Length: 116
Length: 111
Image (cartoon, rainbow over all chains, first blue to last red; front, side):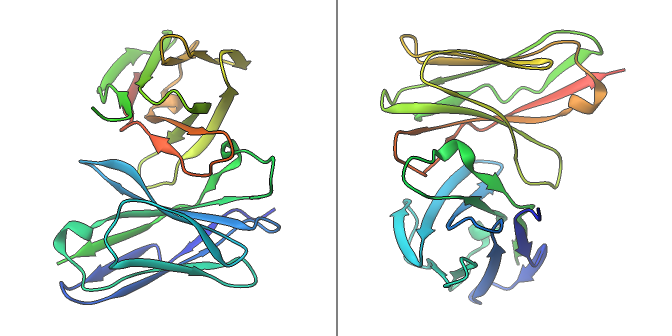
C-alpha cells in the first residue's frame, strides 16, 4: 500500500511569491491535515480537510489556505511569501471516519520550502 | 505555557542503554497520546499510541501515560544506533484530528 506522497520535495521561492504544495493521501483515506515544522516552533497544525471540506483550522494567517479534491488529494497554498515561512511542510493522512482516532495519522516526507 | 512541553535534549546514550523520553501537557481534554520518530530529512513515523492512562509495550518500546500527572513517557530498551532520531510526543482530544506536538527530543545512540 503506497504511503503519503508529497510533491515537490524541495522548493526555493522569493519573498512575495506564492507557492502551492501537493499531498496525495494513502488510498482510502479521506482526511488530510497539514502541519508546518520549524526549529523554533516545532510542528504546528495548519488545517484539516475531510471530503473536500475544511473541518478544522489552526492559528495561521489567511495567507495560508488549502483545498481538497474529490479524490482526497489536497493542496495548500501560501501567498505573499515571507522569510519566516521557510519550513518543512508536512501532510498527514487519516481514514477520517467517525470513531477513527487521531492516532491513525500517517505523515508524508514533507516539502522543504526555503524563502529567500 | 505551551500545551505540550518536551525537553529538546540532545540526549546521548551508549548502545544498549535504556532511554527515557518524557512530555508534560496542560490540556486535560487530551485522550490520545502518540510517539513519533523522525529521522533527518524525513517525515514523522508513528511508533505507538495509547488511549487514556496506562502502559503499552511493543518490542523494545514501552509507552506510559499518567493522566493524573499529565505526564507521558517512552522507554526504549537495549537502544541501538538505528534508534538515533528525533522523538516527538503528540496528543489530541477525542473526536479531534488536530495533533498537538512537543518540540521533540534529539537522541543519539553511540556504538
